Each structure stands twice: as structure tokens, then as C-alpha cells.
Image (tube, rainbow, N blue to C red):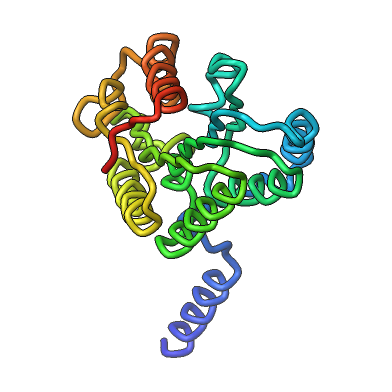
Length: 236
């Protein structure tokens, strides 16, 4: 009987070892790889070609929320925003624009929304943003304005493939506030509030829970034009 028990135990162990182990799926950390992507490099190069040696009244730097406005900000302003951008790729973009001798009298930096979705530490984000402000100053910007990270809708915030959590957006925005204070640059908040309801993007200004529809673009475009075309903007 003991022999039979031992054989059963050994057989069971063999089956356990031979069976494939099923582990819970683990999501890979999302990181900004745009600087290594061909289309991104090509786009930045085309921006440099179009703007080298030129001086603009205002320049906008940001992600798809800003890039969706296209060239509707006036001939004296240039929209450098690109889809998918985070502080990582914006820093690299600015380094290349600096080498291209682009000049901006004013600059609006609307970054952080994708950082809230990507895997980036608070320290790394703040360090990136500090460098972004520093390089923007070397482009000739005497007036720099930071815009907090954008909320998504509550529903979208639960999908890590499209947006960061609302709590992480708050954390990123707080880091932006800290850098604005440290670097003595302007920070707006109330101006973009019409896009939001409490801590989420209004359903009526978005078509997918993250990006702005035509109604949302009207509101956001007005904010940017006021910042770029007026010398007085509300600060922190």
C-alpha cells in the first residue's frame, strides 16, 4: 500500500511539473518610443525645414489634443504639436528644433496627458519638463505658459490603452504646477475648465473620450489664441 501511495505521489508530481503553468497576464509598461520611429523623425525634420531661421510670435508644443488644431492659430504662430507626444519625445523634438535655429517669442507647452498613461516616474517627468522649459527659453521665448494635463472621460480613464487614470492626471498636473513655480513660468487652469466637469472631460466636447470634437476644439483654440496673441494671461 505504501508502494502504491509513493507511485501515485510521484506520478502526480510528474504531471504537475510537465503541465504548462498558467500565470496571470502582466501588461508591459507603456513608454514613449516616438524618437525611434521613422514617421516621427520625418515629421520633426519637416518642421525644422519649414521653420529654420524664422521667428514666430507664438509656438505651441504638445500632443494630439493640440495638434488636432492644425494650422488654425494664425500665420504668426506655429503649431509644433504631434500625436502621441509625452515629455520624453517633446524634449527630443525641442533639442532638434534648437539645432535648427527656430525662434519663438511666446511658447505654450501642453504636455503631460500621455505621461499620465505612460510609465514615467515623477522625478523623470519633472526633470524632462525643466529641460523643456530651459530649451524653450533658448528659442527666444520670453513668455512661456504651461497647461495642465487633460482629463479624459471617466469611462475612458478605465482603459489603460487610451488614457491615464484621473488620479494620475491629477498627479502629473501637480508636477506641472511645481515646475511652473520653480521655473517662474505661467500656468493656466481656469481657461480650459469649460472642457471639463469636475475631474473628467465633458461628453459633449469629445468624440472618443480623450480627443476633442469640433465643439471642444473651438473652446481650446480660443484659449490658445488668447495666450499667443495677448501679453496678459492669467497665471498661477
